[in-house]
Length: 349
Image 1 (cartoon, rainbow, N blue to C red):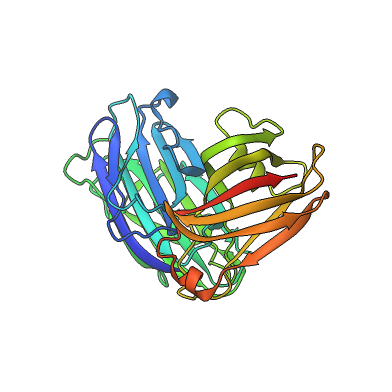
Image 2: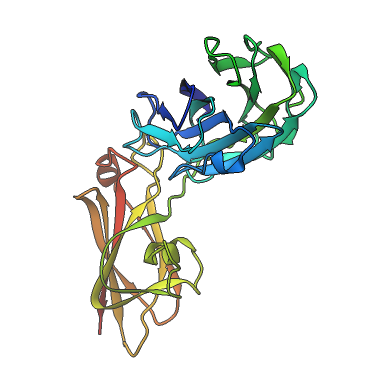
């Protein structure tokens, strides 16, 4: 599946915290990029913290008063129409753009990223170079600029402009941005183009981001705890985490220990609907221990509260890998790949 532009949105504000709405057409598994900037009046305490559920690609301050940031998130089922708030105690002007892309890797959508600052007054801002490591990536270039002039953004040859964020009504200290992209069929070095603004500024930040396409095989790992009883994470999960993280680590030194009759249910990372009823496999490693002479693991796959499949797997006294392939009927019963849950229950003797 090739990476494709899905939708975009922009928001700008003259003072305070900025809210921007995720486009309604976004689907679970899409890669969301949020790029924007804030006139922070030269006070770092006014700069946006990374919004909850997002990951910072890069944040930077450009003297004397521009804070610029690029964040990403893998979209979940409840995201379309939701508002992302970029919080500041300051009163400076700000802007932001959200651009959504389908066909990206649902676990690690960012292949490569680079950022640079512009401190010399110019209308032509050169994007940093970044070298992709996968074929069929998508390259996004963006710029954020602060000044007090009427602004516009040109479109770089070979790229498609997806969104500008402009406020040419309230000019003093305003912040503007542009996001543009193109396909990158082969791995190599990208960026180095000039994003040209309508007027010069010595306060700008530029970003080059390469997105990773979804592979033929998608992998989902636990991302949340839903329910448990008689289940203990080993080693003990750190603050803000839980036993799901022991399972997601995918190593034999990090696991969940279940008492006889104990269980754990975990939420899984969103996948892209493959539109196929074949090749759906659940894989885990397990064993019995602590004096047991035999053991079974009862595995249940659910979509929300609805059971898709359940099976019993006999395990040995040493860690081993166990796999189960869903039937076509079971796989075709899945309609929401962002709502999958796995339950592991112990039956020991």
